[in-house]
Length: 243
Image 1: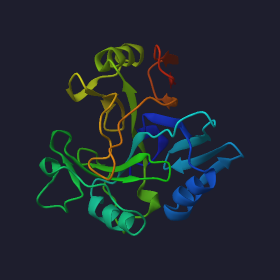
Image 2 (image 1 turned 90 degrees about the vertical axis):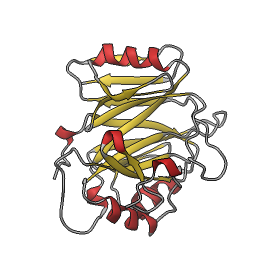
Image 3 (image 1 turned 30 degrees about the vertical axis):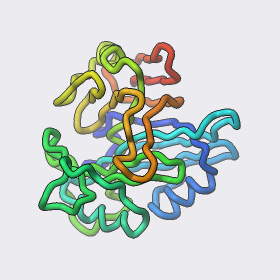
């Protein structure tokens, strides 16, 4: 099974949260069974498979941040993951045009990526995804469990000029465009890790309650790269470090 850190492009993530850290602990450790790798009065680090994800308490003057990130799971376990997650949370609905008639209506089918996924919210309002990428040879046996949450394979950056941000990331880290691109969305990397660049204002809720419009919040990410270098997005609180 492909769950080692060597297969993951995204090495660690650091995000800000307005949710109480006790709520984040109860969700990721208590509900999902992921390990707590470290915690203090101001932050908590969860083991998202091979990817440590740190949530840092927001300052009082900061608005409630939310992000989108995804975890790779074994490519044959999407339906098992759906059943497992439904025992713990609701799932976000899916636009009809993105459904697969052979799957339940809350499963999204990324035809151009040869993948299926589900979405849910954590206590901070982060849009979390499990994605089964069928081009990866990571099939595994047995029932789905927290050990099938392999590593973080997507993290989104929200900007006003998608092309400019994407070009900067590509040049800095020698990343390839992944299968599609446009003025409002770009994906950079491969199936083991994608840096997503979204247009500010994109609706992240997919019709689940009130619209969640993508906005800019502090984000730090370490990635596996060909050289040790750092990219700081001009005018945005983003820091991406390559190792």
